[in-house]
Image 1: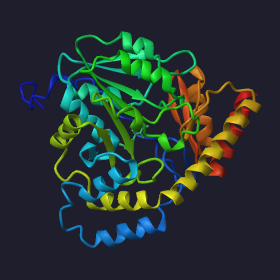
Image 2: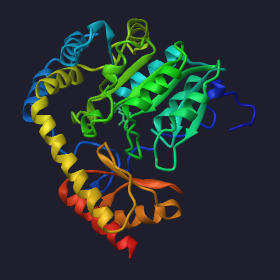
Image 3: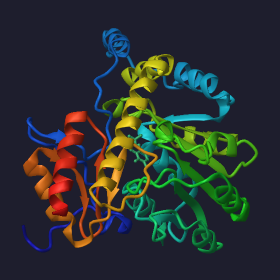
Image 4: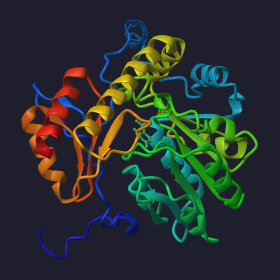
Length: 356
Ligand SMILES: *Cc1c(COP(=O)(O)O)cnc(C)c1O
């Protein structure tokens, strides 16, 4: 192509955008422990409802997502006006940025935390302000509160944190929320809420009630096992929930996702039994790692974190050869999803050999 050929002008904000790295897709014989998915196949009842709904996918979905929003409101005891759905909770997070932040604004989050935060923040045009985790892999909420300026528009708080699994406790979170100015939106990302067993970890849905500047993000992708259907939601007071409805892609949450999410809320008992089994596996895996001599943070999510530093990529390569694909962050550590018992056993064997 000649040098003088013009190309469409793209927004400056997109320059150097970090690519979202999806969990590597393993070959058929390997276990995928890289994306924090639910290893269980869809529940038969959920699958059946989706199959039935598929008969009608020549029609647009319910644009207001009314049945699902009503089901969410009922299940969580919140007004339906406070519920806003989206194409995964990442989709909702992107809408929150669209509604609050642009060039010149600042968005605060812990680092390392969820990989999507820097990407969607940059796309919004706002500036990321990353606050390092503490040495024990936790959010440094004091430092995050101190990082607030008059340009701050939104703060992500990932509880429990992806990828370290560490969770924030009630009193420290309340102290933090009390310090943040009321015109700054605090987003409590609770993608792994259903795996939390530490009673000291607060439920964001309790904290948001008397705080109009708090939005809670939940997803159907993890505990509910609907990652492939892309549906998540926020619970927030009306001005924020309304802004989410305004910024939603029209008909974004597809009809199969709507039906599956409604059916999943009704089948929670069965789904939460599976979560409990995964939590027990988590307990077993953490205990085995400590037995092997690893220092590991307690995880309240469906994954564990190994702070491997320079040895991270080596570990990931060895795991892959052994048949499990993990999620490495070069120079930092590896996140390993709690999966099938057999997969967890392979991971533990690799971890044990790696220590020798
Ligand atoms: C997996 C995950 C989500 C969920 O993303 P979806 O778009 O709902 O699939 C959100 N936040 C965090 C921190 C996650 O790890």
